[in-house]
Image (cartoon, rainbow, N blue to C red; front, top):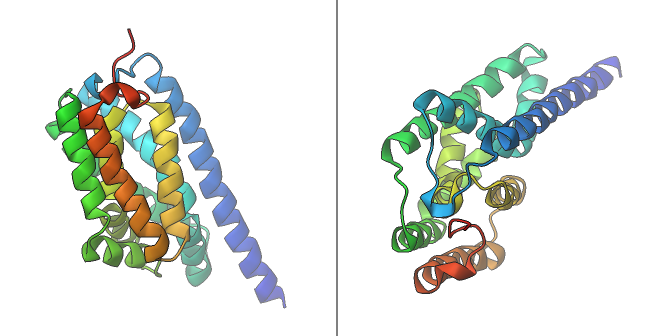
Length: 220
């Protein structure tokens, strides 16, 4: 009985500490993004600034969905000390994605934004996406492995954020909800396919009439 109670206690502490870090990172990210949202024309700032911002954003957006995996890892090891290493290595993978974003990103127009969003929507329909999504919900041995699987699962949704407005708290929140839903819910075509088609439709609408998309056109 004591072992069972200890296990529940361990999972509870691992989960609450992970969610606390995510909440703190939301505050940090929002403060860093103040005044920087220019829609698709947003600039990233210096490399150091962006990497710190991106790491905060990924912790805020990805850790809520990663909480079950963190709890399982703590339970399997029987030690809370594995949690910082697991979370840190998981976020390190996403930080490397941020380095790639910094290298490739340029302020852009509606055609580029729409094309990227359409490509992201198409990716949501691929078997590769489904495979990564299932792996992202499975038991893993390390934060690096978990991060790799979750990047493969969520990269399309992150491209939507980058394309539409990388500095928008509103779009960041929308993508977070979608990422969380895909992390916690099973793969189900009746839900996933309409979501993917909606993303494709969003991309088409961006190209046709970008003024209809909140946050895409720089505020005047």
